[in-house]
Figure (cartoon, rainbow, N blue to C red):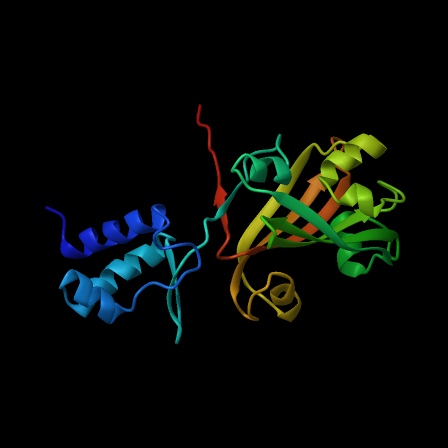
Length: 236
């Protein structure tokens, strides 16, 4: 026989999966749950804490507990499928909006990362990726002019790596990626429709050609409540 808090947790999960508690809807209060299930507030609180840890609900201070949106899974081990293909495979509708495309001179940090001369022309691409019309990723990518001169907004409105291959015969051979937790600044929060200092995932990427040339550097911010990651490891 499972404990009472486990039974309550499973009951709430069943209602979430049946859409009785719809995504982003507010759950009953702790007091209401106590009355419904005839248990103590401590038991209810334990159940809600576990639901929060498992990603089913989000607790907002001073507002209450809300059903979490289904997270969009990104496979960090996958190099074959694009963002759009991964999202579509989950039954969702992807869309990439190019916010800006400009040529900027490489400052010290960029010239070091991209292995270019100081002040070399760099194409700065700022994009917003949507899933079902909700923003999931805010991204800034940098591509040296010498790699793909004259990128267009249309070419950047789909998979950048696919566009580099199709229009410039540039083939990405490998990437180095570093992910960490980050607090949204005002700009990121505005584009991801969240509040400043809200936790998010921050991914830095360096993309290399077969000969070791750095073709792209990107900084991507993922909405913390909408994104999840999958990593596959193969052992021999």
